[in-house]
Length: 123
Image 1 (cartoon, rainbow, N blue to C red):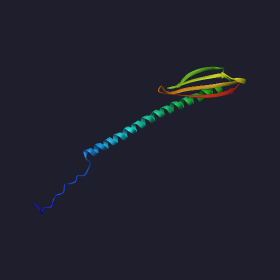
Image 2: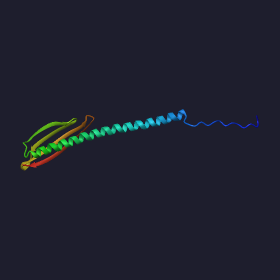
Image 3: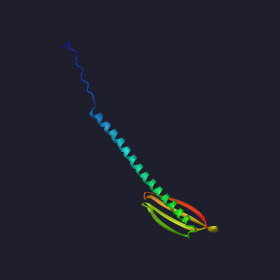
Image 4: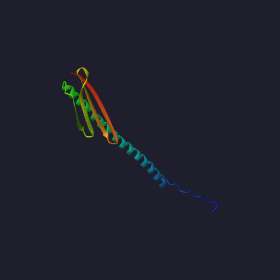
């Protein structure tokens, strides 16, 4: 019919299946990036906790040795916390000075770390 009005195709509202799949892929990539960052933060927190435990153990050991007055020269070791190894020594220095050293190893086998504190007391 030449004079009849043409019907326009009806527009659909909403998302197509392809748009939905693209949105899901983008969301999954963002979620994976977030999970990787969270895992890295957990590892960093664990390492910081071991470092703090090691530092506290070393400071405590040096305070005990200083509080003992003039401890005899010697050495020792201990494991004050899981993943933390401590080695200390008392060495006679010049003019009656005792040199105190406390070394702490912490970390993991793949990322070892160490801390050394030194002090001296006059006897």
